[in-house]
Amino acid sequence: MLDRLPVEIVERIVAKIPDTDLIAASKVDSVWWQEVRREAYKRWKNYATAIGNIYWEIQALGKRFEKGDIEWITFEDVNDSYKNWINCLTEDQLYIMEKMLRNGMVVDSQERETIEYALSEQRWEGDPWGLNWEWNEWTQQE
Image (cartoon, rainbow, N blue to C red; front, side, top):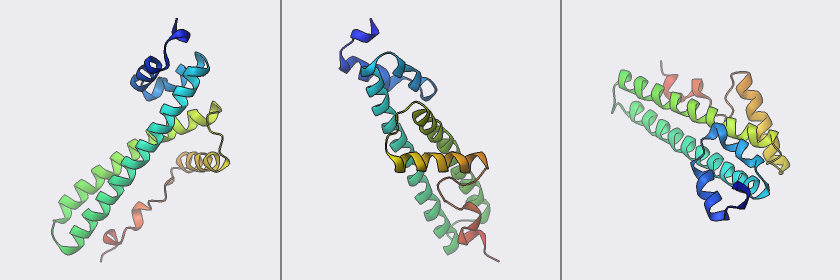
């Protein structure tokens, strides 16, 4: 029955599937595979956008701290929360990216290299996106 649903219904169903089960749904048939691949790319992009937005929030927070607009303890608390949020989003994003790679959903060689590099960095507890947390200029003040 699942292999005979209209594409519009498949799109709605796939959009509701959690990240952890998304790739498994691609095994139903080719329509599901295509829709899961499209949804996985969409989620990958959404995670990247969210991570980028939070990164810029951290940068703005650092500038406010440099100007003396916020206290150090407030800066540290908010900064740590943002970093933890980025780390969680990065884990979720890399999960999807790895599953896509392992299931033949990534065909572009540059995307494949990006995923392999990011996964390697994550395994070694590195910074897959080059955000370089410990070297922000406002944490290096004397």
